[in-house]
Image (cartoon, rainbow, N blue to C red):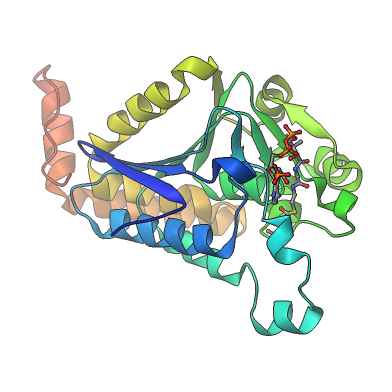
Length: 257
Ligand code: HXC
């Protein structure tokens, strides 16, 4: 499939999606949304792909939803068209997804990064929810996911003032998993993704499902869910292979990859 707003590459078992609207700092318009969701779905259905990376340019991961496209909208068209509702399709992606963020990740850009399973940040990354400066508020999960990731106080301050946080603050706050030099960001994300893609795919998917469950259910239910998944893994050949490889002091060669 040919896309106009994203670039799609495959690096062995890793799918790489680069947001590519440089003239608008990768602002997320409807076309980019559809293309990105379609590329994610394609990789997710491809048994040859074990991890996906989403990145932007050096200057911007994405500077938000496309303000020029939204500007003239009315309540009726927004509501009836359920704008941004299609991002729920991202929750259906079972393959692990890494956001590799360099430069601006603002508004919908920050929200897109938070929809990924974890965020690797370049030392140049800047995160923010500046919607309030436009007279609106986050609409792709910012008020919810940011609060879960960094806590109420910082999320409230970020969403009420619209200020940006740099990569160091984002790491301290738990928004990003780690910081790498900007020049190494994509290589490091691909390396991390390749590590994940070399694992048993069902095991990786179950990890993703279990960690995501922590956001949805009380601890007692989450613990039970985790334990049941853990038990079920003993039906996988990959459990036999992984444990045998450890005992035999060799590298595991998982079948279900
Ligand atoms: C449309 C955008 C854009 C956006 C930047 N551009 N952000 N176009 N939507 N979100 C365009 C600019 O209009 C400009 O186009 C070009 O990209 C370069 O941007 P500059 O502003 O000239 O660059 P710079 O001076 O370096 O400033 C970078 C910036 C600034 C600080 C990131 O662009 C900025 O503040 N952007 C808006 C950030 C924002 O408010 N995001 C939240 C959007 S609302 P021209 O044609 O002039 O060269 C949102 C809602 C989410 O995300 C809720 C549901 C999704």
